[in-house]
Image (cartoon, rainbow, N blue to C red; front, side, top):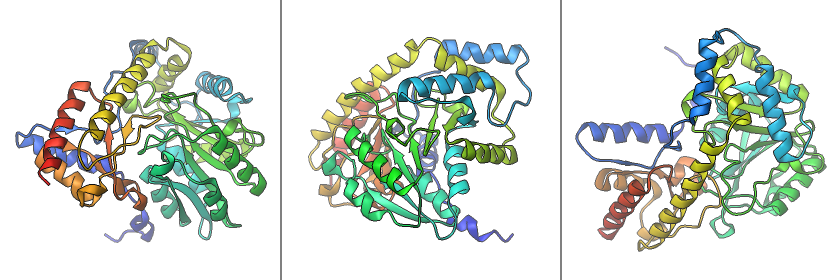
Length: 389
């Protein structure tokens, strides 16, 4: 079978590959602590589950509009308007099965051969994958440890050219846990407005800011979703709904219509019952989500303290998300070698920093979306393993 050339430009998400390796070791009787997958270890809050069940039992099992059901789109518009302090019409909302389709569709709609797309590195690997798949040129901007994994706005300005068709932001960030400051977001907004460049702002971790308040580039003059910000969000992280596959984008109306057409051509629509559950998530009780966020903050303190007590490791305190991104350069090993060593010798599944781009060399990523008991078990195993190097 001969594959199209573009398939060679499509990357992957290493977390799922490491999960397969870890499961294979478990099948051999090994005890593995899983810190590779970015997935809340909590169940979906009961009120959301009940809303989904009610929808199924009441016949919400048929096709719905490609861009989403009106009730859910209105709930999303109200949520974004209230938290970003901008006006949002429901027509700017497109609902998708998970957040990745928004990345995929927006990049396909805006970038083509000869265009350049600026994206964070280390960053979520699908950004670079889809930029390459679209035939555009990926232009990485480095997230720097010494800046708490923010980037230099002056460097961003230098990277913008007449070929720049899109800037991608992610705050709070995967894999670093970094958060862009309001000052940096304001400067980024000024560059985007000055050069008339749309910004894809991945805000999937917007409810996981532990120090200060969440801020969006969409809140600055000229950057509302009606103008040039595409907000990517979803329910996977905040509401522990990874398996429900529920995401959305909020974007300029002309782009929303194009993304809706891509939905029609690919998925037809997002499952109806998940959208009714998603409506309850945004409009119903937030107690379940708040308990999860409090638990993540407690776990953050435990894992960062523990990592910094291990010789030859150091870890910046993440300001958001649920990832620790320790520096492992003093071990003298590459990121991939350390990740392989910890899995095979210590029984701890982590990801190499290079899974998130070339600037991830010298780091590994650990998800602390697991119990404190598991975190302490992992820390003890990592400490013992590193001491043997």
